[in-house]
Length: 228
Image 1: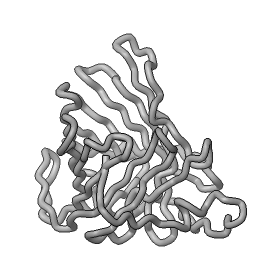
Image 2: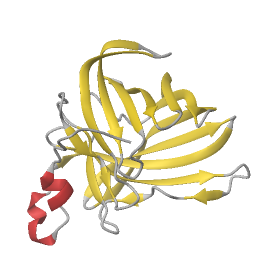
Image 3: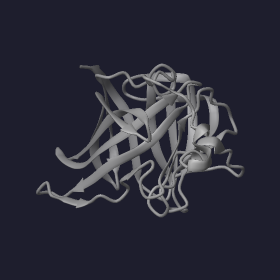
């Protein structure tokens, strides 16, 4: 749900990597995701509170020790569980990896929406780089600066999120913490052109707040961080 006029994609990966004629363009990847704006330390649990479509909920994001090989890259698995009125409404596993320059790449997700009986009603949004024409994208640059813009994911008609950096000195206050030097991004997708999201990240912590600012009713704020 996403932004900016000039989209500065990292072409070597998003467009070129995955084609047999230029496989050498694939960047080198490291074992752990240590980008300070989006660190993924296994065992870390982020708890967010807020609402979606006017319904209050709790979103629990767990960095797992599990990994998955995708296009020859070992990716860290992150479990995301959305609860509405105490009931599991959505379950998602996302896969991330960091290149040698410090950029965090998004390699796909497996998602499911569940009804009140716990039955899966939709898997829309599921994708994996290298399958069906899907391509990984940049989720967090190594050194964010205002004006940068990237495609986070690509599976035509299913996963086409983009983001852009609006500020590196934004203020944010949530239940768990506060900062006057947060990273503010703007996210959008051509699949939902009337919708726009803002996200705020704190260095050394990660995502602190996200909110739909146009075309929707969704807001999540970091309430707690635990380490298993």
